[in-house]
Amino acid sequence: MADITPAEARESLADIDFTARQMRRTLAASQFSSHLMTWGLVWVAGFGSSYLFSHGIGLVWTVLVSLGIACSLGLGIAEQRRPVVQSAQGRKLGLQILLFWTAIIAYAEVLGWLLPLPTVGARVVVIVTIVMLGYVVLGIWLRSSILSLIGLGVTLATFAGWHWLPPKDFMLWMAVFGGGGLFVPGLYVQLRWK
Amino acid sequence: MSGFNEIIHQPIRLRIVSALATLGPEERVDFTHLKTLLKLSDGNLGAHLLKLEEVGYLTQEKTFVQRKPRTYLQLTAAGRTAFRAHVAELKKILG
Image (tube, rainbow over all chains, first blue to last red; front, side, top):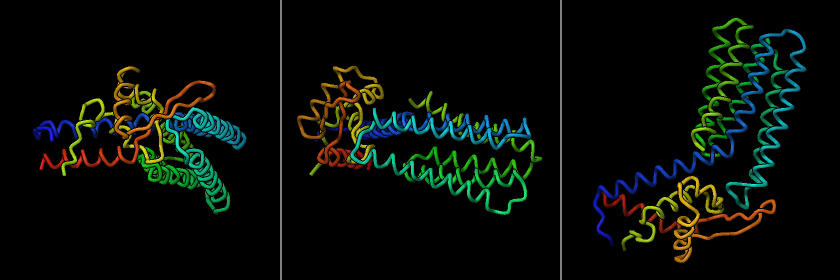
């Protein structure tokens, strides 16, 4: 065995931790930062429109969400074609994540419409909370704490805004803290972790 | 028996193996991604990968993705075991 001092051993262990963290971060940047930014922009535009206009919002949201889904599918397919990490399970995992989000969005939409919610704000809270639960679960599933933190942070911001703000201002709040809560971490990961 | 591993302990190889060990046992990473992460040249990384491959700690799979050549790197079970033993040994030195 080589003659290793405790200081050298400590340095090597620190190097191992640093490299492993960098690896996880760069993979996160390549795998989901673009999705976060896409959905952040969708929410900024959707809630921003809800704040500015009172008519035709349903149509605006339908168009924006459709664009978001198309972008996410495109990004997912591009990643599957030129994967940074390749595995026999990769395609299966991609399909599982797609089904997972389909289920989350379906539950959010159905509950948002079916529950006897008194206001549009209450409906927003239910839908956003279910979608953010998706982020929390996905973070645990993929061992990516930033996704779980985003889920928790946006949920807390949503409840705070709903509780403290008038309904119209709540939409602006959601554009900033909901959309921004997705876009800004996505941009940060893209710029700093890649 | 000591888990200390001279092959893995070399600083660049330690970083290569540390990065690959964060992946699942079935996963392989793109050569270019690892090169960028570790800020190494093609030649430098390639030489260390060859060394790890020679002792059976790593496999390189050359493939074509959209008609462009790509190399994927994967830690073998032996490489993973050796890395774990090496880390355990380093921790033991610290007491």
